[in-house]
Image (cartoon, rainbow, N blue to C red; front, side):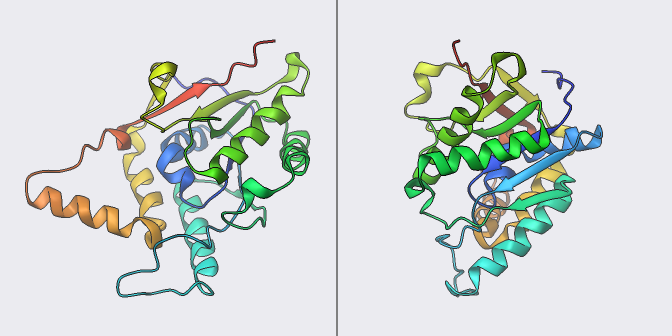
Length: 225
């Protein structure tokens, strides 16, 4: 699919590395076109399960490690406007719904994005992912139809996505594959094991499919009104 022209893009995910897995290539392509991108990352992922083996971090040191990783990943994606929103990892689902909607609305009011990238409600697995998706969709739903931005939503609950069909948006990001890989590598505290495993599989002649490095796929949220 050819990239659609955009005025401003707002990316909203709850954790550092959500963006690298889902949309780093698309972000890089748009930045190469000169489109401004703001990334609102709700938490620092301080409850991330990977502390290293042997451990390289503690619960106390991990937030600062992930902060620096996120900043490095944004450099590879070309993001100059990174907003760290200060919520706590694994508690986004417990935030007041109206507070979450207002957080997103305030960003929309400030930035006037033509495109928002986030998770797909009901198909994002993690409770923090779901809470983020709900807030974004509700904030946009409350806007007048004529000024709503398009919402590209990432769904990856493979066991339940059958009813949704194939994502209608498929973006070829192979030209910026290395930038996406570098963004993933920047989140080393959480991704090093995956990259190491893939390298091992390549050496053994059984590489993981890297189609996810060549294509990024999104659903378009339909507000049905």
